[in-house]
Image 1 (cartoon, rainbow, N blue to C red):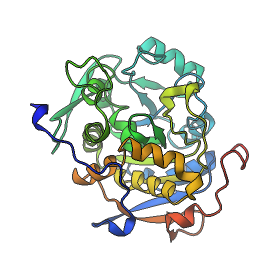
Image 2: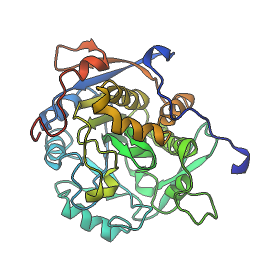
Image 3: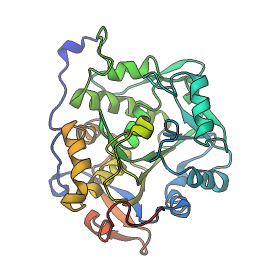
Amino acid sequence: MNYNQILPGSGGEHYVPYDQRTGETSAVYFTRDLSADGLRKIFSRVSGVLEGNIAIKLHTGEKHGPNIIPRPWVEALVKNDLPQASIVETNTYYDGDRYTTSQHRETLKVNGWTFCPVDIMDEDGTAPLPVKGGKWFTEMYMGKNILNYDSLFVLTHFKGHTQGGFGGSAKNIGIGCADGRIGKAMIHTTPGSSDMWDIAKEEFMERMMESAKAVVDHFSPRIAFVNVLRNMSVSCDCEGTAAMPVVTPNIGIVASLDILAADQASVDLVYALKEEDRHALVHRMESRHGLRQLSYMKELHMGNDRYHLIDIDNQDQEILPVDAVKGVLPFGSEGER
């Protein structure tokens, strides 16, 4: 493929309000209960599609990372609701504490991910998955062990990201299932470039979403998505203890069977915050043109950007994002949860 003849889309720095969106709607569940119980309750709303050998795609983080989903929450979920499941990861593209499988396994021990199997899927090589309808790729290289699973539960810490603007469900699988050497290089680096991060803005978002589409198509309909909107630094969990301090209030947890609806609702919840509370994370999203993730997922027919937000804390009332964030407290003032 001649990448020089392909042009990325535009508009990744512009937020599209709900009333300007068109198309069908999906269900998105919401809870304010940021706890192990809250995670289990909302998971139960989307768990019915998961069967057989189940993988949990989780960003397990760099050593001592302060903002990852709390390990006890995940442990309670696995032991009570997914006792036969495995957490799945792949090695990193950058040289750090998860670059090789041995380094990665040591980091997993340090962070306490020892209560269930953790499969580093590219430990024994890669496998190409087809990308249907993409413009950058016809296939994406994933960790080979992805082929060993029947279902995928995408459990995501929603936060900012230095390159992607934000990291939601789509980034979790688009980058997180691609193997550390071939697949991630296809997304991040123009062949022959000396800058491993030279692909950015809309082109990067589109490449990442095509990779995510390969994963969604592979598992569909046995795939479900949960985003935890807590400790949302503008930095990704891959930055570990070097992450920027959190200034965005904690919001809650969303779940959906629609990847676009899950990520769109998460972004909408952030935009529904007061200006002073959302400024840092919104600036990170827009300055990196990260909102192209959402519009390109829609172009790829990966889901809907319109949804019904269902408040599971209040008899499944349908609410708006502004209702969901009403009463949120500045970060750090609500105590540890």
